[in-house]
Image (cartoon, one colour):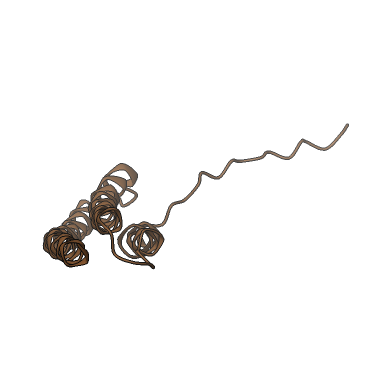
Length: 128
């Protein structure tokens, strides 16, 4: 008789809540801003590109915060209902803070975009 075959259990991919928050709130918005930054002369295209990169990065931050809440609800490992509710409430407050901050950043990015577009128009007018 041969020994029983080893039973392979497939471990599901475990996505860390902390990893999603760090990646979605800090890393991805920074990378988008760095990729689409204007390292040369300021033009209409570069100003719009930088403004939209900021808005896209903050949208990803908001979606990742909401995704963390959805992931916590979907996992629901804890048997204790009170601990689960506390976790969801804490994550909801974190998501609200991220969302409020992201809307503020997008608002200032819009104002900065208008300022940059005015600067480009003024420079083009002076150059004749």
